[in-house]
Length: 531
Image (tube, rainbow, N blue to C red; front, side, top):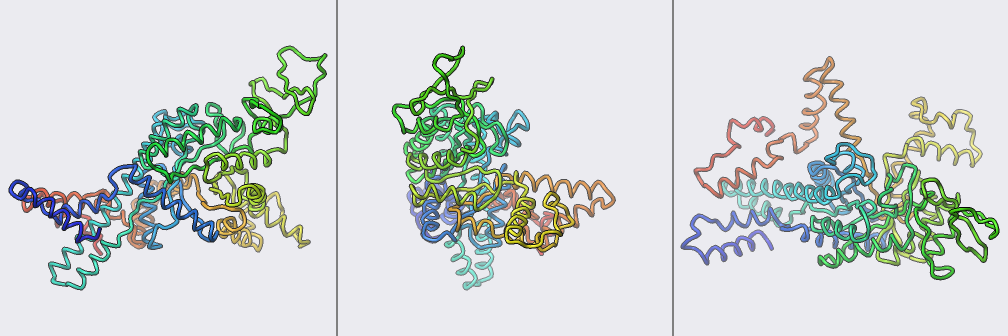
């Protein structure tokens, strides 16, 4: 509804109680309603799920329509990202938020900093989703509140043209609410545990849940060693559990991202159950590293399987884990992806050890032979040394072309000595266009950086500490923080406004009228930033 329609509706409701609801103003009610468009997390989940589905269809029509997100570990960070995006680009279209299990473990657990091994409290994830959307809803309320003040000022000045322009801006206001891709790790337990946690996440507002095929109680960060995968049937049961949670709660458009860690996982905890040759369990077992066994020489405690009419002994470690054959990672990834898309998943995530379009695209091409519209969410991870990787890729490409590379030492390409070189400039250009090129060539629908604000918080804090506690003193803060906020138009330079002080003043006026004791008077030091 438009602003005027919302006022009219509120006025009709108040009119039914005109003898008893003295002092309740229809326009104030309308403003509060518009500032609180989304009443529940399920409202948010349904709204954002439709956005993701529309964006996926747009990408299928043209890969130039890929989407992006940055990882968040606090509601304020997510809020500031969306405010910044609206300021610089005018729209949030195609921009999401990512909720990283790694950052939840490292920054949000009551145990303190933890490795990415699903040891943190599982309820922390839905709590962070709720927190993110609380801050995004507050960003809506703040922005609309400033428009309402502009409208009041235009009316007071008798400027009908300005008042009409502001009202049009109110009617066309774009919410800061965007999809969140939420990491559920390996489900924090069995399929029932996955279902229960999924419901909590969806009720908090999640329209998209990402789940991985590692063993829940052996889970490792995707870019560390020691990863252990589960047979397909176990993983598919968890995907179905997430889908049932979406359907039960009425979020039919909910999106599931199936992540495979098989490329870097050389171990499994179980030998898959198989009914017949060639079934999904048999395919999983075919990747096991086995030795042929003479039936007469079976050892004590040996576990044996039959393969192609032969008796085979899978290689088992003292940890009771079984080993896959070396070099089978890509084949396992392709099988993981195909079976996931055939059993309820919507998008794929292939965790890789480097950002290489050829490697990713090769696997996607094989997947698309079976699932033509398969598309990926890709982790543009800070775990990669992007500078070194791309300088090496350029070095290798130029070497293959027969160019003279005597001026470069491949083992030392990270050196600052190469900054500004032709090779360095070419590598930087490939990094700049990586997302666009990978969207077109490797089927990547959504690009994200998992841990960006973990690193930016550390970097900015280090720079401030070096200046402030050093010779620069207070100038280290003023010159490099506050002055930059003012020059660049960073909204939170007026931190009282950002925290909701002006919204509170508006409410005081609604509730108490002339008796309201407001904080935004002449003595408020935020007025120093009015210019």
